Length: 298
Ligand code: NAP
Image 1 (cartoon, rainbow, N blue to C red):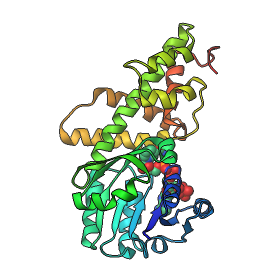
Image 2: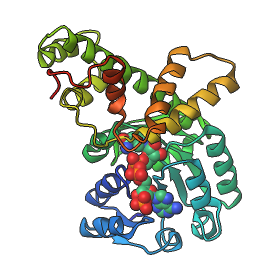
Image 3: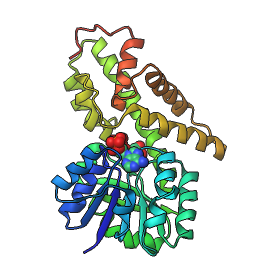
């Protein structure tokens, strides 16, 4: 039986780890706050009290952590993954982090005899629960094939996009598209409401045409009802738009619409709304349009 050490059992990590358990893997989970470790144990996994305990017997180690410093600390820090994982084992980081950090982590892991992949995901909490995430993978082709059965328990679209760090570059592009799509959907909702049109009917027909998208299908209904519980927190999307903004500058390309949306997300985070779902961009469009007391709002 393949043993998977899983670190970071949050909104995404816990359902992903549960899918591994359901597929028959021996999953040993660790998380900073202990209640989430218990949730994995309740689902049939094994709980660990430290990174060392989670990874020392694992054939595959997965991390699903918030940000670049978290991944660097958990992998390269004292008592981290690289100090305790078995040489030859696979280490797969599925968090969204900076491509340059992913490359640095891959080099440090390789120096300890590990096979390292960056494999960030798209599809949100629903995709994590349903096991149909899109996984963009950077690393050596042979290592991607070795990890594929494990990745296929969590996702349905698994694509090798290039060497170490390439998965994170594609994920940054993903976050650019998603933020822009949410902002335009928010603007369309406020626009249609202001004209007194039935917004549910409007979203139904928009979803059937070229304006249709996974963002519209997954976020539209909650946005109409102004339900902004996460999901994907604005503060995490703020982090990702920082990654894409600096990576675009590094590459010498411009992202004018992306930069504008990045500022709107930054405004929401700065005023204390970072804990809301990223569909909370609608809150700002409502306010900028003076429609906070709009009778059409649910
Ligand atoms: P989350 O709910 O905050 O989960 C992160 C988990 O990591 C938390 O449970 C946290 O524990 C744990 N953690 C943090 N530092 C740790 C450490 N040093 N050791 C062990 N555990 C640690 O975030 P998420 O929404 O699952 O996102 C995780 C990653 O996936 C992020 O990079 C995000 O950008 C990406 N992502 C998220 C989504 C989404 O829709 N949510 C979609 C695609 C990609 P505590 O309980 O102590 O906070």
